Image (cartoon, rainbow, N blue to C red; front, side, top):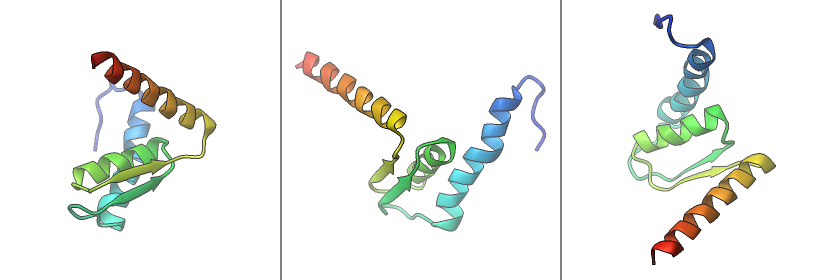
Length: 90
C-alpha cells in the first residue's frame, strides 16, 4: 500500500507496525467473537491497537494491564480527573 508523501514517516511506521500487529492479534490470532471478554497485557502501541481491535470485534469487557509506572500514573490521573468532573456535575 502506497502512502501519501504528506504523511510523516513516524506516523506511517506506527500504522504499518503497531496498529496492524495489535488488530491482527485480536482478529486473526485470538479470533475474538461478540461478547467475549479480553485482557490485553501492555498498553503501548500494539496493546492499545489490540484494545481497539477488541472494540471493533464487539468484545464484552476489555481490560488493559500495564506494569509501567508512567502508564499507571497516567491512568490513575485520568480516572481521578473523570471522578472529580463527575462529582462536580452532581
